[in-house]
View 1 (cartoon, one colour):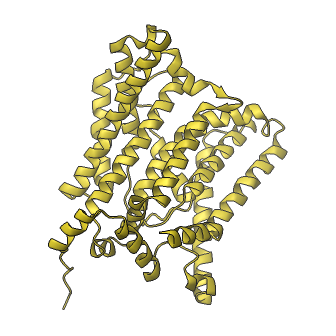
View 2 (cartoon, helix red, strand yellow):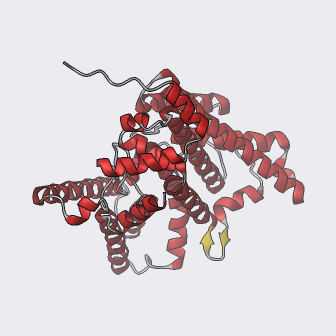
View 3 (cartoon, helix red, strand yellow):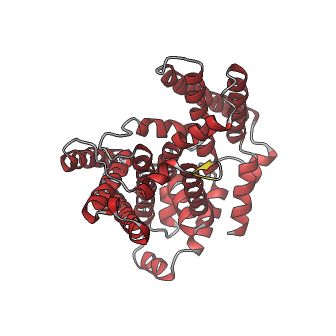
Amino acid sequence: MTALRRLDFSRLLHDRSLTRLAVLVIALVVGFSLASPNFLTVLNFQSMGFQVAEIGILSLAILLSMLTGGIDLSIVSVASICAITTAKMFSATGAANATGSRGMLLMVFSCSVGLAAGTSCGVLNGLLITRVGITPILATLGTLQLLNGIAIIWTGGAALYGFPDSFLNIGSFYVGRVPIPVIVLIVAALGTAVFVNRTGMGLRLRLVGANPTAATYSGLNNDRVLMSTYVGSALLASVAGIVISARSASANADYGASYVLLAIVIVVLGGVNPMGGYGTVLGVILAAFALQFVASGLNMLGMNQFLYNVAQGVILIGAMSLNVVLDRRRSARGPTRRDRSGAVGPLSNEADLAGVAAAATATTPAHDLADRQTQPPARPSEES
């Protein structure tokens, strides 16, 4: 496991797409600072912090599912279910009028119930994918519609209000000069990074995304990995729901409907392989801030707000095209010494897969391995 962690760190240092993304972020800051004197100010960065946190957390939820080669389209609906459940709990317990320690206790209790409700939606996604066998894109598309319909019926299509001040502080207050939503985003990012890069389940998750057949032959329980992935994705989406409702002081079934596509753009721009197996939390966070800088900069320059959609597409297509062109050039030149050592690139070659499989298998509980040995996976049929 230690050797694999060193490999991950080396890969991060030499990740060209991550380097290009960091250069893009710096260029955006410099360019908009020169174009507008109000861009590079504490007030503007605080304002952007309030806005980027919620989409950044939703992007982390997409990251988890995409690392397995799937996708979670239900994240916004899950966030809405969490926010609405929390609002209903506030109303039922009278938390809005409570003060002191009782008010704080009711707030924590209501948020916990909301997070549990949102996370349970991830269990539903996991069951549809692992037990029923529906592909992730169709399963989560179905739950997106299902949960959105439930939310509209539950609220009557109206926004819910009446949140206690202690809850609203999450979306409007600062710690020092740092907005609380940014702190929540940082904590969520660190937790996701630790889960993906420093736990046995995270290693199994990456192996399933890189090569599910190799994961099966390595003795891993792919269904358990996928279930954990979509539960984790729903938990992150629920945290985003808390931040969204605290910042807007309301809970609405339709709030943030456009965030799904934006989160996908951010994750792909952040260097995550849509086919699974590779991606970095740092890349996703940089991509989220890059698009936020574009949105804020265009707004300060008085540009049409729809131009932001054009900018998203241009940046995404440009970044992906550059990656494809550079990958083709490297392939034409042949593998470099660094490539052959496995220090660069996703978990795609046999050495990488073997390393992750060995590390993941080493952290698999003994009774799981015993179950796998008594019921070996069926080999795929070979065409004659």
